[in-house]
Image 1 (cartoon, rainbow, N blue to C red):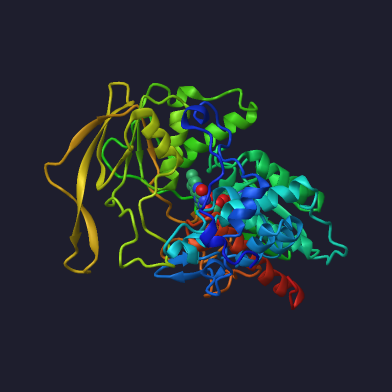
Image 2 (image 1 turned 45 degrees about the vertical axis):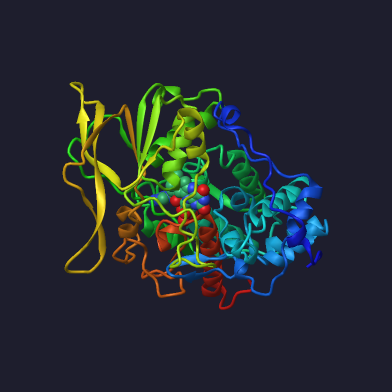
Length: 494
Ligand SMILES: Cc1cc2nc3c(=O)[nH]c(=O)nc-3n(C[C@H](O)[C@H](O)[C@H](O)COP(=O)(O)OP(=O)(O)OC[C@H]3O[C@@H](n4cnc5c(N)ncnc54)[C@H](O)[C@@H]3O)c2cc1C
C-alpha cells in the first residue's frame, strides 16, 4: 500500500463520460480514461485492507462476491498508484486473460466487495484495470508469444465467447494445437454479437484475436458444430474438445399473439444491429429497425438496458422496459449485507439516455405482458400489460409473482424485444456430443470439474454455469484449460 491516507484524502472520481446528447448519435464507446495523475490518486484509495474480499471470488448467498479470477487487486492498485504500469500489467496478466473486456463491461464484483465501499465509495478498480491493459497495448507489452515447444496434442474449442477464447489462449500457450469453431461469421461470442458496440468497441476484440492468431490459435468461423461438422468427426480428429457454446436458448413469453411480426428476441436484434455496423464500418446504421416506433422491452436486466440504449440510437419514438420484479431498494437491505453482491437500484447507461430523451425512467416494475395485439397485416400494434404481486405458493412456500386482476393496460408497440433471460444450452449440440445436461440444460459435470459425461469432452462458461458474466466465463475457460491440460499431459503447469 503506497499512500497510507489515500482513502481519507481522495474522493472516488470517475473518468469523463460523453453526454447523453452526444453519445446517442453514434455507436461508439462513451467512457474515457482519467489522466495519469488522477488515476494514480484513485489507486491510492486502495488500502490493501487485509480483508480483501475484492479478490475472493466465492459464492455468498448464491451470488458471486469479489473477482472470480482472483486478480490481486490491492497489489495491482498499489503498482498503479506508484506509476509502475508495466508491472501492474504483468501482475494482472498472471490471473487474467482479457482485462480489456472486463475493464469495459464487468459489473465490477471486486468493487461491490471493496472495504472502502462499506461506508463510502469503493476503489475504482475496474477503471484502473482498463487503464493498465490499455497502457500495455499502447506500449507493446500485451503480446501473445508462440509456444517454444508444441506438444503434438490437438484441442477443438467450440464457441468463441470469452470462455472459449480464454481456454484457447492458455491451451495454445501450453503448446497444444488449438482450433476454435464458431457458427457466427466473426469470433467473440456475446462480446461480439450481444454486448453493443458502445459498451465494447469490436476493434478491442479484433486486436486480441489477431494476437491469438499470430500465436498459433486457428479460428474456423461460419461453422455450426453439430450441423456443419459432427461431434463424431471432431472427437476422432482431436485429443480433447471444449464445449463453450454459451447459454443461447432464450426464454420466450407465452402469450396470445406471440406470432405477431415485430416481436424479436433481444440478442437476435442486437446482433443484427452490430453486424450491420461492422459490415459497413458504421456507415449503414439500421435505423429502420426502430425509428419512430414505440418500443416495448420485456426484461428489466442488463440485456434489456442494452436494448433501450440501442433503440434510442436508432431513433425510437418511445421506450418502455417491463420488469416482473419490484423496484429494488436504493441502498442495501439488511438481508443483503456487504460483501454480498448489492441488490440495489442501478440506473444504467440506456436508462440514463431514456431519462434524458423522454424525461422519465423507462422501467415499469411488477408488470408483464398478457397479450400481444396485431394489426390486420399481422404486425404488432399493441401489448396488453398486467401488474403483478408477490404471493406465497401454498404447496412450495415459494414467493411467486401473480397477476393482479383488473390491472390490464394497453400500450402502443411497433417493436417488442424479449430480454427475459436464457434457458441454458442448445439441445442439438449436447445431443450430438451425447453429454448429459442438468435440469436447467447446462452441461453436467462433477462439482469443481469441467469434464462432461462423454469421453474427451469438457465444458466451460455459460454452457456450464448458465447465463452469467464475462468475468466468470473467462475464469471458467482458464480453469477448464488447466483440467484439459492435465488430461492430455498427466499434469499441468498452467
Ligand atoms: C445482450 C447481453 C449483454 C451482456 N452484457 C454483459 C455485460 O455487460 N457484462 C458481463 O459481464 N456480461 C454480460 N453479458 C453476459 C456475457 O456476455 C456472457 O455471460 C458471456 O459472454 C458468456 O461467455 P461464453 O463464452 O460462455 O458464451 P458466449 O459469449 O455466449 O459465446 C458462445 C459462442 O459459441 C457459439 N456457438 C454456440 N453453439 C455453437 C455451435 N454449435 N458451433 C459453433 N459455435 C457455436 C456462439 O455463436 C457464441 O459465439 C451479456 C449478455 C447479453 C446477452
